[in-house]
Image (cartoon, rainbow, N blue to C red):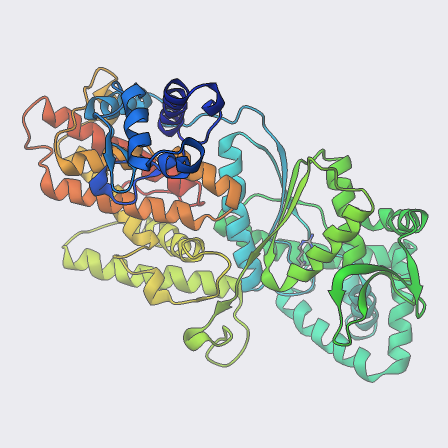
Length: 585
Ligand code: ARG
C-alpha cells in the first residue's frame, strides 16, 4: 500500500474507534481507489458493512466517521455519497509536498523493503543441443523483469538458469556423434548450435529405428553418469557450444543469469529417492519407483504416480526438480521460489510441489510458485513459423525486429530532413527493436497467449515500446529546446498544481510504488506496462493543455519539474522491464 493510502487508512481507523468505541478499533476501513475519479481519489466502503453491527443506516454511520476524521492536511473536506461511501480527495498542497519530497531521491520515494527475502527466480532455462525457442524467450523476458522488480524492492534475488544439460538424450547424441562426427567430441568449435540441432534430430531418428543403437546409447549414458573421462569431455564440449549460442541471446537482451543446470543436482538424486522411501511415500509400480499423487487421476479415475526413478534405473525431470527445490530452500535459504515456464508445465510443478510438501521439504514460511505464461503464436493464432515452415530461430526473430525498426527510422529521419551517423542509427534500431519485442511480451497478461506481430509491437503509437521511448525523448527535447538542465532545477524548485491535467499527472506519478508492490505480489509485469502507458498519456494531456517553456514563473519551473519527474519515472519503470531509454531517437 502506498504511504498516502496507509495514512488515510490509519486516520479512518482512529475515527471509527472514536465514533463507535474500542470494539471498532481493528475494523477494516475498506479503503479503495475511487470507483470514478469524479468522486475523488479514494473511498471508504466501511459504513455499508457496519450496518448490522451498529444497527444504523450506512449514511448515518458515514456521517459519524466523517465527524471524527482528521485528514485536513491530506484531503479536502470528506463527503458522504451514494448509499454511504466516504469520498476523499487529495489536496493539491499535499500532492505538491509529496512530489517535492521525492524530487531529490533517485528511487523516487519508493522505500526498500524492510525485511528482504531470499527469492530464487528460475527462468530462461533452455536445453543443451536444442535451439532456444520462443517459449524460452518469454521465460527470459518475463523472468528478467520480475527479477529486476524484486531486486529494486530490495529483495535478495538469485537468478537461476536451470539449463537442461543432463539426461538420456546425451547418451544418444554422443553415441551418434562418435560414429558420424567424431571430431565434434574432441574439438572445440567443430560445430555450431545449428549443426548440433540437426545432428540431434538425426540421432533421435536413429534411436527410434535401430535397436542396437538404442543399446549403444544406453551404455553411453551409463558411461557418462559413471564419469568416464572421454564421455564427460564430449558432454562438456556439447554444453559449451550451446552455451555460446545462448550467450549471444542473453547479451542482446541484456539479461544476467547464473547457470545452474540439471547436471548440478545429479549427485543429489539418489538421496531424493532414498528419503522418499524412508518417509514411506515411495511405491514400486511396474518396476518404477514413484509417489502416488493426491488429486491427480487418469481417465479411469485411478490415482496418477509421479515417477522419480524409472524402470531402467534412470532419474527424470521431476526427480531433478525435487532435488532442486530442496537445495534452494536448504542451501540457498530461499523464502520464495519462482518458476517461470509455459503454462503447459503447470501440472508438472503442481505434482513436484505436492510431493515436496508431503515430504516436509517446504516449510510453512516458504512460498513456491509456478509463474506460468501462454503461447507465442504466429499471425492467425497458428504456431510461429518462418515462411518456409521452419521453427523460428530466436536470433533471427530479434534481428528482424531491429531491421524493421531501422527501416522505419531511416524513413522518419529522411522525412524530417535529419542527418544522423551510422552509429546513431544502428544503436537506436537495436535498442528499439529489442525493446519492442520485450514490451510486446510484457504488456500482455502473461497467462494469455499472444500473437507475435512486428507491425503491432513497432508501432509508434499505442501501448508499445516505441511509444514509451518517444515519450521520454520528447521530454528530453523540452530541456534541450529550453536549454534547461533538469538536474539543476534543484530541490528549492516549487511545485504548484492548479490545472486538472497537472493534478492528474501528479497523482499518477505518486503511484509507482504501489504498482511495484502489486507486481511483487502477483508477478504480473503487465501492470507496470499499463501504469507507464497511462503515465505517458497523462503527460501528453498535461503537455497539450499546459504551456511549459512559454509559461511565466513560478509556473514554468514547476511544470519543468513535472516534466523531469515524468521522464525519471518512465526511465525507472522501463528499466525494470529491462528497457533502456534513449536521449534522442
Ligand atoms: N528446460 C526446461 C524446458 O525447456 C525448463 C526448466 C524450467 N525449470 C525447472 N526447474 N523445471 O522446458
